[in-house]
Structure formats: structure tokens, C-alpha cells
Amino acid sequence: MGPFDKAFGVHPYSMALRLDRAEIIASNLANVDTPGFKARDVDYQSIMQDVQSSMTNAAETSVTAEHPLLYRVPYQPSADGNSVELNVEQAKFAQNNMDFQTSLTFLNMKINGLYSAIKGK
Image 1: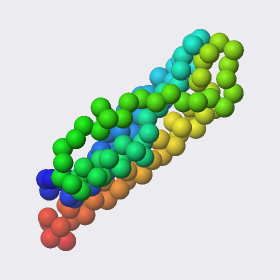
Image 2 (image 1 turned 60 degrees about the horizontal axis):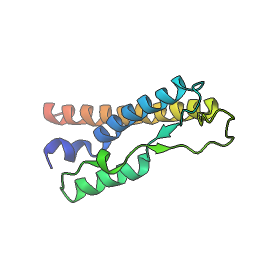
Image 3 (image 1 turned 90 degrees about the horizontal axis):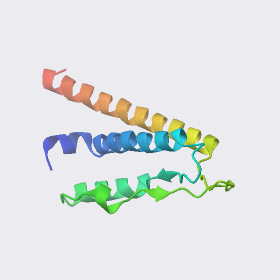
Image 4 (image 1 turned 45 degrees about the horizontal axis):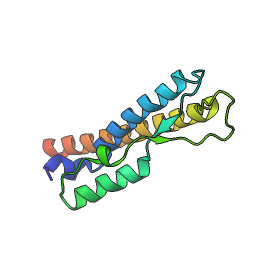
């Protein structure tokens, strides 16, 4: 575990995962009218628990290989087999964006704190 891992914790990993998740959800949204398309997502909580555990144990593991994309179960199945629900995907995308912004704000505060400490303020 390097000094940046200690200083920033899981937030860089969280932001990277949020970016990946945004692409997955955007793909779902792009295929809202594609017959037979199945909405996908990741289990964010499970992946972050593994990241935090690997950081605590100082083990290098690949969490993405251990956590494949999951299929989203629709609230109301469609006749053409498409499981993308526009309102659900939009809500997931918005929540993911807010969570990304929160992590970005936290990292920015950490960086500013480190900068102040280095400058002796």
C-alpha cells in the first residue's frame, strides 16, 4: 500500500468504478428500443467491499474479474424481451453521477488538505 492509497483511501477506485458504471448505464439507455436487449449493471457495494478489504489486507486483487456484469430484473417485462426501463436507468444514471461528484469533492478536499500540510499552513 503506497502513500496515496493511505491518503485517498478507496475514493480513486470508487471514481473509476463510477465511470465504468456510467458507461454501462449509458449503454442500457442507448439500447432502450433494441428488441431483446438485457439491461446490465454491476454490484457496486460488493465490488467496493472487496476493494476496501484488499486495501486493508494489502493484497493485490482484480475485483473486476471477480464481479461480472449482472442482468437487471425489470419491474415490468416488455413483449420484445428488452429489459431496459427508461425511468429506472435514468434514475440509476443520476444517482451514479451524484455519487461520483461526492467522491470528487471528497478527493478535492483531501488534496487541498495535503497541499496545505505540505506548504505548512
